[in-house]
Every structure is written in C-alpha cells, then in structure tokens.
Image (cartoon, rainbow, N blue to C red):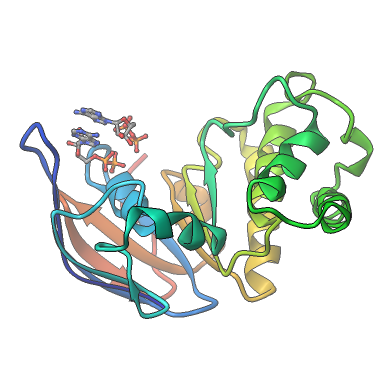
Length: 228
Ligand code: ADP
Ligand code: ADP
C-alpha cells in the first residue's frame, strides 16, 4: 500500500536527508523507524503525508504517486492518513471535544456523524468524561490520547507517528503503545519513528533503521539495535 522507489530529498540548505529510499509497506503492518538523531527518520515520515516533497523518486500510496500529486489533491491524501506528533499539537483554545470535531468539520463530515464519531473515539481512548475540558487541564499522556483520537476520527487506513512517546514517562508510554496496538489490530497500518529501545525490543514489529538518509536495516520482528 506504501511503496517508495529511489526516493531522494535534498533540502534547500544542501543537506541530503534521503539518499535513495526503497521500501514496501503492506496494509496492516506495524513498522518502527529507528536511527540516530538527524538520520532522516522525520524526513522519511513527512514525505509519506506530503509534508515534504521528495527531490526525486516515486512514493505510491494505494497506487497514487504522492511525490507528484497536485497540491489541491493533498487534502484527499491526508484523509487517509492520521498523524500523531511528539508534542501532541492540540488546539489549546478549543475543548477536547472541539479538537476532534474540528478535524471532522474540515473534511465536511455531516454534523450528526461528527458528534457520533467524536464521542466514539473519545470512548476508545478512555477519555469521554473529559470531553468538555481544555487541553492544558490534561496530563501529557491524556493529551497524546486525544491527539490519537483525533487522528483516527476519520478512520484512516494509515497512521503515522513521529516519536509519539518522546515526551512521556515510561508507564504512560506503554499505555500509549497499547492504543497503537489496538488500532493496528483493527487493520490500520502503523508507521512509528521512535527512540524507545524498551518498547521496540518488547512489542516486536518490523524495524526499519535509517542512517545518513539510507535504510541500513529492515527486519521483521527486529530489534532497536542502538545503545541507550
Ligand atoms: P527529530 O526529533 O526527528 O530529531 P529534529 O529535532 O532534528 O527532529 O528536527 C525537528 C524539525 O525541525 C524537523 O522535522 C525539521 O522539519 C526541522 N529541522 C531540522 N533540522 C533543520 C535544519 N537544519 N534546518 C531547518 N529545519 C530543520
Ligand atoms: P531525524 O528525524 O532522523 O532526526 P530528520 O529527517 O529530521 O532526521 O533530518 C535529517 C537531516 O535533514 C538532518 O541533517 C536535518 O538537520 C536535516 N533537515 C531536516 N529538516 C530540514 C529542513 N526543513 N531544512 C533543512 N534541513 C533539514
């Protein structure tokens, strides 16, 4: 469902962050993306939802080349992809419920569907009772749950996460991982960049290691493979 062929990315400052990525990811896979800081993990991920455009190469998502996708088609691509960040990126002036409803409003869902879907995903992440609260009234782990709820509200086939547990304590990180496991078990493809050695070595999945803009390792049920 996701296929990168000879993908290169050179930033305007001359840095080559991708030096020929070749990768195939099937529907339903769970893939960890590991590697040192500055290796190109974020670039790899950003190109999958067209936050960055490759300089060269093909990125097929369900047989559509998103490397050359017209700008006006990008919103349609994003509907199929949920994205979760290390720093949650919630809208702090809106309530928890409004944060999720807003994500559905922008894709012009029917008001009835919005209400139903928003409450469903809040229930799924165990925070229905906090729907009326503001993001800053929630703990980091709860805020990440909300950002996950928002990212799955429109039932995307692909979920992309860039260091989703990077700002969380170990116990909370495991809880967040359990949510990703549940989402993956429902058939959603999960692609997650992470520095969390413990998690990668315990909840085993495919591991893609990136160094200097190159995939240096790609293993089913792989290990984290770096110290610390
Ligand atoms: P990570 O947490 O993945 O290591 P970084 O801290 O390297 O991320 O970078 C965070 C973001 O800042 C990147 O995703 C990128 O968009 C931007 N960034 C990183 N390095 C540069 C740079 N040299 N010039 C401009 N923007 C950069
Ligand atoms: P990682 O996520 O593995 O830390 P990144 O993909 O963020 O790596 O960065 C890979 C390389 O590209 C780094 O050298 C980084 O400084 C550079 N980089 C990332 N984003 C930008 C950007 N927007 N402009 C210029 N350089 C960038």
